Amino acid sequence: MADLRVTYDKTANAAYVYLTDPQVRNKVSRMYPCDPVAVGGMINLDFDEQERLIGVEVLAASSKLPEYLLDSSERLDAGDA
Image (cartoon, rainbow, N blue to C red; front, side, top):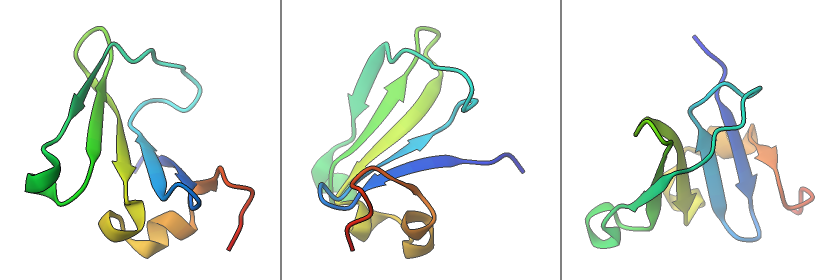
């Protein structure tokens, strides 16, 4: 199974799940916001120029993603507890 890179900013309660090779910087060509009512929060899907899904931004991440995933993510908020 491939490693999955996840970043998390606890202060903003926002996470980003990268669905690409961590060594490659893909440019976001288009962002599709999911219906916040239907998913109970704000989730944005990022696509590259070939319309491949390259990442998922999750706002209100602590209520949408498993705690173990957030605990093991790369912290962007200097690790404030």
